[in-house]
Image (cartoon, rainbow, N blue to C red; front, top):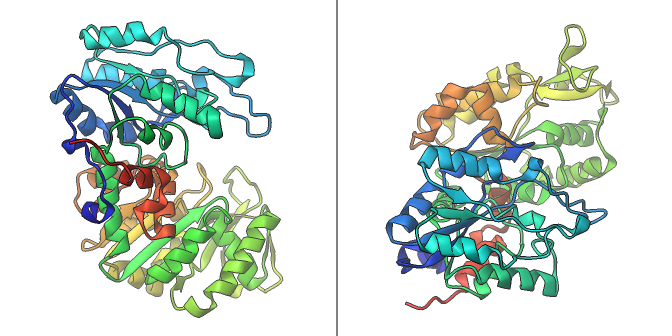
Length: 433
């Protein structure tokens, strides 16, 4: 795949004595706590390699969403700090990292890189410290800005280093630290980026039958990916709010909590899917709850969608029942598959878990299929609900867990990794040999 993409790779770079600015996707902190370090650990190969080849590392990542989209104000707080990541790396690798301190421009975040960082870079060159970790990139006003402000921030970042390495597959948005830096420095794809792109080929050219499972809390954010998967996959299975909206659009059920936008998107999808009905695998048993955020006895019940009247009004539908995966048709689809892609949490967490557990257990029973899991919540819930399976999957060649579920869906939607702006920009780069 790399030959077709003309992707500049880390192993082609001369790193000895160079300051290497590495963009990673260590966005694993929620309210100051790391719940799963998988995305951090996945980048260690790149960091070890740079260090072994004599490079000096400056790391950067975004954490959370500190910017208020309505007011454009940026909140700088422990909730979106990189410090828990730094603490984790220092403890795990027995290294010394420093985080530079900058002054916030009111509610506008950091206006840019300050010259005070030069003292820290001198320490890095003199081996007094092992690396620098920049503050959350989204604390800088230029990171998500457009035009001149974005270019200025990218230029400032480039001024810190000799080489740029992008190892942040999951950070596919067109921001200064993921896209603009390529203009100013020799730029390369890190080992994780290479690995993620290589595994996309297992979706682009799957062993068949190919089954895709997609769930989510918003239909309109996934609809283009669903169109693409309906055409590409042999079977498509829906879950979450996406499935609720689909059921409402197709069967006329009224389901509490569905937005008008989701229902409108679902109606468009149902119309589009008319010629692909043989590909859609409906999960017949759903869990209705009277309460949106609790699973209490006598407050929830299981329905067979085929036994409900078309004008049925339901309370919150918060899961797919385990019985759905015992149905012979559903069971057969999964057991005969040779490639299974999962970007799905079937129920409303943390209380409605049976659908997700039943799905993952059924997939694991298929010993022959390649099982490709999208990142984010899919990975988190696999670890929370089935920790033994999660640990086994990390070292099982039949499994691959992507670090960025949204990035995978975007790449599927465009049918090429070049649909991801950071990857596209890397392929345009001609680096000196």
